[in-house]
Image (tube, rainbow, N blue to C red; front, side):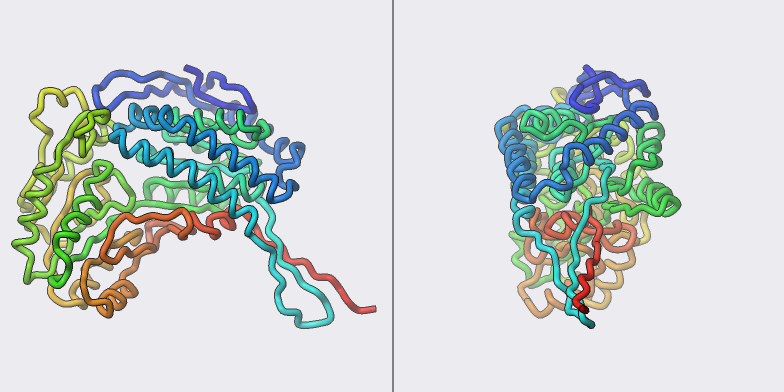
Length: 479
């Protein structure tokens, strides 16, 4: 399988070989050679030419919108193939993969509409002139995406960057290279001029480093771990180019005694165990008011034990494998540290006994009690199906515990008191707060993190402006 798309050609790379393993059964999906510096230089040159020669940045908004809509139609028509490609690469259950394929198509449709509605601005004049603020594309954008949800994550970067008039060099995760390649081929078939979307799989050390350091690259958009985000930010600072960073999380889910507890149970379970916990917004810290702590945590543990792990294509599967065997080992090491620090495993904490799952990277939904907020599993992002439960008393105690984290991506809040919900939601240091729900996401709303969870906002109209730079025009009226 050729692994690069440069210009309009699918070709072999000259970099390190990547091996895709199906985490459900341990079998090899494919092997491809990633991109090295020479491959990247060729792609970057074509991207610069495409922005200039194809007239993409000068196209009228409705013309770009028409093409983005055609790409959306192509993704929708090929949704099953895209869903199955993601499924074999990262192990998500098929139902979730199908939903994410539909979401990717909707993202392109949204930014097609945004092309038609974004406007220039007319600031109030402070002299005898007429002023305008217009927005220009950067030129060549690097988009680096993670392995947990390539269908949605890649659409959230590619669609607005193209809508803004840029060319995109996409580096997908080495674990999930196939989805981006399919999307890029569909975009070409829909009429996107060659060079405006190119796909350069590879590892971070070789491919990622060469991409973010290339002179043609004018802006970087990255979703992934905080450590890698810091390294990219350092490169961007030295090069004086902007970087949008959507990084890690250790999101709290908060349950007050007056909440609808049945709804809260459902929200907490879905918030952490959906996608096998491999979500940046996973509600991995559960704070429960002390008055209901014992009974509520008992119900959470029982619900976790009741979830059905299974092969991703199985109709009854509620939780699939982790995306790789290395990721399962990482999760197991965190659970071991929790035990060493005095934590009590109330559910899970091991691999499933089902013989049909032994070849895959499965791990049971895990609930851990008896730890303080200083414990490793309460501080560090695990990116797996592990929930740490903690009690709280009043609002001040809660807010102090929640905000102690270095992360601030998302938060869930369950209460019947709307005044309390307002107070606590405003006090929590997080980019998204869900009130009496969890993981409701909209392409129309800005998304990003506080603190070490990132810089910048994707999605929404601000997600389009993310890929543009403001220019002020002054029209003199004297004489």
